[in-house]
Length: 283
Ligand SMILES: [Mg+2]
Image (cartoon, rainbow, N blue to C red):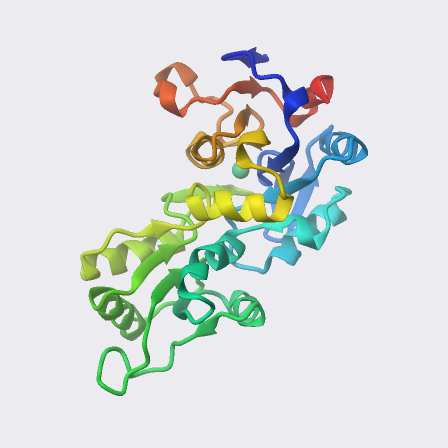
């Protein structure tokens, strides 16, 4: 069932950002997805209207172009350059260091290679935490990681105590997988470092100012003139609200049974629809 919470015509929207899982596709395997009926038509219609769109997932175990490949394999017209993830928005956050940021990463090997390829200086050699000859650490960045050890956690916590920012792609406890919720390893690692380092983590994926900024940079459209479409009010709607975008919640994913009356008004979407296909009547 479609419901508007106010008069927010989609005709005035100049760009769109879509979440991936539960919004455009359902996940059928770790690296395999199936398009939700109507998703392709929606993206085609937007492209035909000359408006830019992007997709934004908080997935960070593989580089952004891997998500683009998955989407194309499912028949969706998404180019490599249209995918945003925390591996992209962290770059926007790190701009404040003027291209000189030294980052201690928790990430998979493919993600590390991606971060290095975009010019981020990764520092995770053993030793050199905070000693006089130690390597400077400006930020600890936690993406999805498939392994962790205490030496590395301790080094990160010491860096944070010494003033490094603690950045994380996402800090929700779990995300939707093909066979139900998957507990977030990134959140577990972040929590460990935050506790030991007495620091508050800064989210750089959805929802965050860094994410709003990277969307604007990619689309060339103000966030106020952008529509954010997603299945998770804690991530997608929250991101949209942060940038004063038009927010659309789809019921095809994690929010299928969500009782919106129990969500504080300040966190509700402008529009709630069953699936992305219902956007076709406004496009
Ligand atoms: Mg989702």
